[in-house]
Image (cartoon, rainbow, N blue to C red; front, top):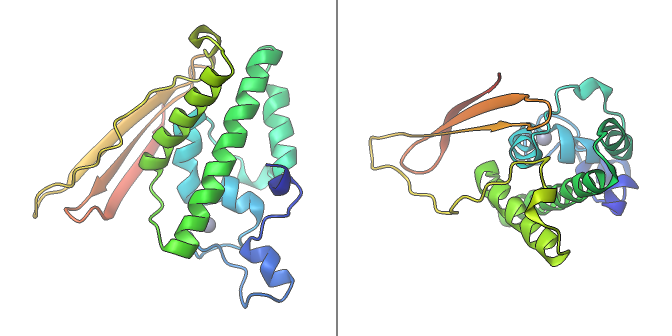
Length: 196
Ligand SMILES: [Zn+2]
């Protein structure tokens, strides 16, 4: 997290500026320069991860200048006590780390970017981290944490599979739903997310 805030992660944009790459484009979407803010907050594929993990909707892209400024704004705007604020900070830090790790697996090992698989992993990690810190479940009322079985079964040939999910922020009652549609090979063929 510290390296991310200090712009010390080797994103394509940073490598390009140092003449170590021919282009600065994001390896995940190939559409925009891969700044650290783009990688962690703005690339399309990370949006469902932030929403799934912490109910965070990053819908003010033009206002995000730096990662540390965004982090400060989110934590400052979150007025629910120091302990909950600290918990949210941990959730954000863990999510950043998982997103960067997934990005690197995608770049170096051609791993698919699958929010529906990463979200439960992050949730599980946070639970384990909180258990290690001996925090009780009652203190975690800012995020509805749900663990899903990390098993994915593809439909039979000729069929498509539709997965849907929803989430609600227990404090603001902001809510959203999303659906994704996959073919029998597991390839994403459509999807939609809606704020309610
Ligand atoms: Zn991107």
